[in-house]
Length: 492
Image (cartoon, rainbow, N blue to C red; front, side, top):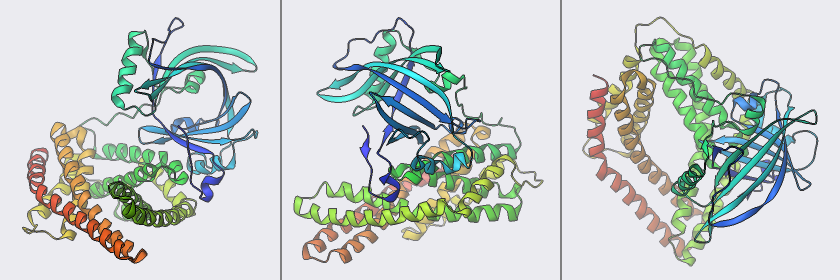
């Protein structure tokens, strides 16, 4: 379901956005939908003209832009990556060119390249809303697609889409199995217009061979993380899903970790300069990300309070949202600035041609260094480590984990086991850090609302943060032990 957006400047000219979670299956001309509990949908005609550059830059970035007509209603629809899903953004209107509000989200993948109509698809859609206990769990759509060129049909095909609504992964897979029993088969994963234009499906570049030079592993990792960062640039600009900014920040951190790990084989001044710019970007995104985490936490906390106390917390959450809106404006301003756009160019160049120096280091040896630093830090902890010390361990754990991911193809299963242990420790220490930040925001809540009842609510929340920290400290030692044991096996 599309949901209305906020009232920020970026959103006012955009009608709606929603996360798209769908599964595609291939079907032949004889396929019929099996009987399913739900409501049949009326037959619909969708006429979609897809836009891209002459080199299909949007398609290569896993993005699609189309103008759709249905029952005389016109709308522009943009689909952008959101993790492994996609987010669809819609703007109503029959203007002949893509609206500026959508083009503004595509500054990085498009640059100044011109958008052109590349193909028109006429789709007859039938299907139904699948219900379980009166809840719509999915929409099943059977599409008959005609590819139109110069007013003529040049190709036809059918395909099946199952879009998750309020159901979970289990219900989605159950529907998939029923469709396969009815005759559906594997889909090649391509969007409709890929198939219409005979474009190949986007497949991840294979990891370098285990014995490949270290620089090849570095280039591969940089390429993957730069692509991930760029994929989430439009969603971060849009600002409707906090996960977009989160994924962009993760990519930034991974890029920094790869550069740090590979420093012995890279030109010192080159890697230092690039790391400084990535640090700037990480800090820029960090303020907004911290607010997203706290808004989500306090929203969940408020659901467990009675109406009187919930009202106090809702007012504070509204205050945090105002801060988040202000942070979004800063993010938008910087992402449109010359510094960020220059950084993107540098990152793309770095992934293609990093400034390498002659070095005997293998990728295994490079990855071992962050683990040794982590091991030394863990062994140097006091019996009751300070909050600052635990935060430093968390940072070193991230770096050791990302370094292990760089060497995973070379080290094999021991690296995979180490990565799993590092992720578990990192997540637990993340809870500790989030609790510390939450306590800081609780004190801000007290300043924001100074009633006696507010003091009582704040006291309860502070106690919860202390309990969260206590639980982390109680469960952390076994994770340390597992991590060091697996690290020793991975980096002999």
